[in-house]
Length: 51
Image (tube, rainbow, N blue to C red; front, side, top):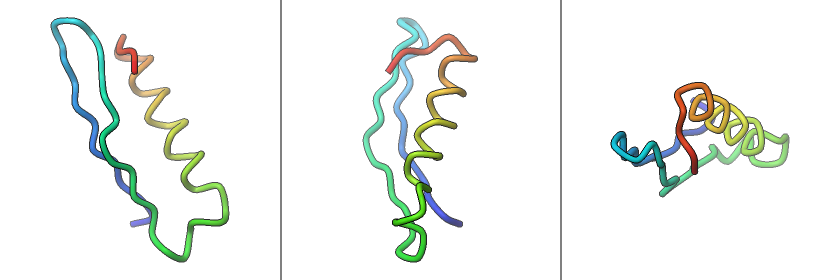
């Protein structure tokens, strides 16, 4: 696993909060964090959520 995130969702208002994002030591300098954030943002957008 390269990274993980804790996201809290509020379905009634379609909002979300990103509480924690963690990237493994060997992957911190190769844009893994940016990629993970982009994937999270895309998933939230597809499902109608806003950060």
